[in-house]
Image (cartoon, rainbow, N blue to C red; front, side, top):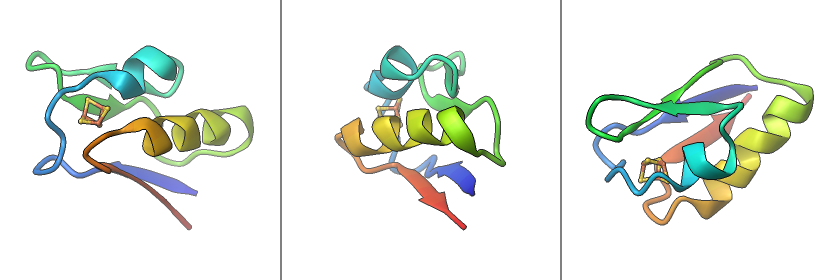
Length: 63
Ligand code: F3S
C-alpha cells in the first residue's frame, strides 16, 4: 500500500506524527511527511490511524 499526504490539504495539525511517530515526521513548517511511502504490516496500521485522525483528511492510503 502507498501513503500520500495532500500538501494542499495539510494544515499542520500534527495529529498524524503525534499519534503515529513511526510513520510520519514533520517538515520545518509542521506539515506532515511520510517516513515510508510503501507500507505494510504494523506501519500500515499506523498510517491508517493517522489518516482517520487527520481533521483535514489530508492522508490517503491506497493500493
Ligand atoms: Fe497535516 Fe493532518 Fe497531519 S493536517 S500535519 S496531515 S494531522
